[in-house]
Image 1: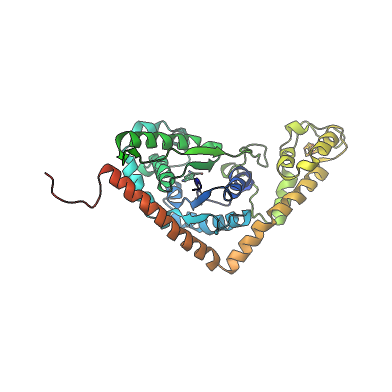
Image 2 (image 1 turned 90 degrees about the vertical axis):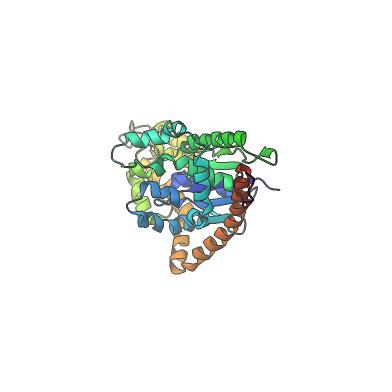
Length: 336
Ligand code: TRP
Ligand code: SF4
């Protein structure tokens, strides 16, 4: 049997190049090697969007549209929405009984958000975010979890929860939960247009379905080697965020651009135009997919319905086993 892969993304905004290069490309590669389950983690998005959940909900279809454009194939992978499979909330509650609060309080993501005063997320649900994430993985017996580096602490917590649960409960003498392992992608840190890590909260993203003109505009304004002021100055590609995109999108011309930059043989405008053309070309399927799915919204609807049906079957079996392993089953004969 193929190993299972489970991963999810929160529908909280448009996917950008960072998501694509960091995680999504990895999803696409994995779907030919493993039995993959990919999920829109909309319960998770409720932690930050609890006052305006409707907005987050509207990001589900664009998320799926981008996944399909990237090459996820519903014939190969099970693609679904978390809240369409009620077992996620059920297992999350079950696991919460095996998760000490102190483990959750020392989770770096939780501490970070608590210190970030402009976001008011102080809920019980947010504290339990990693427990829900563990439930997501365990329900599908996910052995491998493709994620970005920022998610490593959550995965470590999942492993700890699995160990604790397995230590206390056994299923026919065996571990009831498989300890998942992370699968980190090769290019986890993608630069944004200001040179910092690409992130929605910095407002420095290039979204995958970005309008072509907006994309070119943003690239024009993108930060370059700050030491290179005039066209005649020589540049240093090692200090230039634009150059990092050559790695991802045009590796064949890297060497040439490198030496041209160092000898002031090429100007930044031309250098950006070359890479912008390539990014526009590579992101064309994302714009097309949006258009296609706006014209025919039933395409995504039917993919998600079929995905949820399959996911419910897999997850339903697991939750029944896990409840059984703690002795919560339908055997109500009086024994005492
Ligand atoms: N927390 C993840 C993120 O924000 C999303 C997520 C939810 C997830 N459930 C998951 C990732 C299970 C991997 C496995 O990116
Ligand atoms: Fe960066 Fe290209 Fe300008 Fe060199 S020429 S500084 S690599 S944008």
